[in-house]
Image (cartoon, rainbow, N blue to C red; front, side):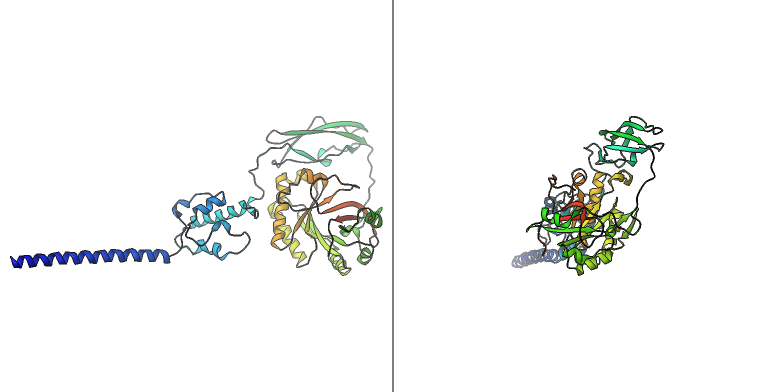
Length: 434
């Protein structure tokens, strides 16, 4: 009996020790698992559920991210290199390629939604809702046609739609040009959504004339009629600065005389896009060199005719290569004004605004600000300027009725100033230049 009890005690003790060892081992295993998780790579929570999702807001992205991460993908600044945001997804070996793409897309969407900029992928969209009827951009009061000439309405008007890139145009009658006289024609513009607008034009058939004038290849134009002295008397003041804008059409300029006449700044055409080819204004280099030497403040403008993203990128790269590291005192002016032929460019009104916005983004990447140059009419009918860029207004009148904001006003194209033989534009900048 004694031997039996001893054997039973030994068995119970052995079982107790075995249970104790097992408990300790299990506890040690839990600790090891915890350490391995904390020391391992940071993961996005629910990575298997992210695949195929779209993030439409900062809030949604933030809620999806792992709250234990040090990186908040929703606040990475656009255009800046962030070690955290750039390295997070790429350092996670457990994320597959599809998940990485979705996370990157989510970051891009967040930056756009926060108002920090527009990605190139959002330019020239085909997803705009068509809410407006087409508009006449150029609408003359009277059309003059040479006797016996073919009548093509496209030679006299410009038009566009907010969404359609190929607006339907119809005339209520054919115009007979075989005899001189007067007639009228009603033109109707119709978009794909069924919106339409029309206008009636007076048509005068006149004797054909071969008369014309040319300024020749060397630039220059007719003399101006508004003296700089009278311009300064009417528009000068303590809180404004007066200046001019020039191109090859002003010929050779004596900027020392221009400065002595009271001019404080000059906006110079660097070049532009013409018939699909970029060019540099032939006197740009001498103009900017001589104007700076005379002590004038300097700006440049770009003669624009871009109609798509490829052309904008090409023009922006060309401009930056010509400009180099030149210091400017004004934003670079974007000057798109071929509205008489707008329908031939194959774009809508959203597209032309995207041309400007993309151009401005390209300039910003090079460290330059941009402004929009346009007339009162087109500022009211074409340009939305939703990003609030500075506006250089062109309105040849003694007192403008333009109600929008503008930082500079091109008041006349008939200026006359010592140092320039031909007419030149006079401008009022609303601020004092240091």
